[in-house]
Length: 80
Length: 281
Image (tube, rainbow over all chains, first blue to last red; front, top):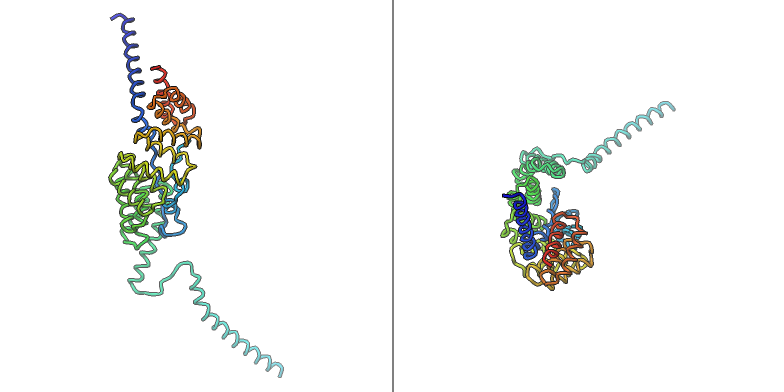
């Protein structure tokens, strides 16, 4: 096969692949949103001392019942 | 005469001092015991001594186990808490040991065992919110969505106002396709936390998944009002605008997302989507 023809075929194949990929990306934004942009799970709460969760200083239990977003140590993803 | 009186005085003084020392010694012993830092057994009863030995061992192993957790030495921590549980501690030490053992297992990557330990903690202490919270996280990590949903429902039932309970349940609902529950839970979160950009973002994701694109756009714009460089929200907005047929606005959103993102995956995706729109123009 002539080199020129071979190079043209490769370029054609690459373009078709890129175009197909672009089409797929443009055509399936909902799938991408679901996968890439899904909200993250929160981090696990930390250890509890021997006195247990009922102590006034038990941070993990307070975090678990907190009403505020930051007090509950929920993900803050605004830097992504 | 004076000498005799002096000797008599000395003898009387010696008797007085002896009596005083005896009296003080009798009274001082209970005070000394009150201020002793380590309780000492007042009994030679074998059962009492055995209980004291077990209590001391539990106390020391908790300290060692917590220190190991702090140092991310999961294996050592697991050993300590396993030994504590073998001593059949009373509450709250029992549920607490199960909880901390769950954390140790999670550190080791043994999520199934971690899930078991958090469940055991809740069985011993049905109001243990921190254990419920961690149980949801671990179950999600294992993709055990049924267990995650059960734990999240229980968590929310026990703590209806808890932000973490709402978020966890909403997240599980999203993953299982129960978009109505996700929308409701995240909406409650935004009502309590209107200033949180991420709260609006999570609600937007639920709306988008429910195909409520107008509502999704609204929440994403609220998120971006609160945090203009929130690249993930900007990227999501671009996908919504694209689905609504507003290609020029979508392209601009992807451009901004690519510019603002610190996350390579989001940046590359934004660039790909921007370029795909340009390619099909």
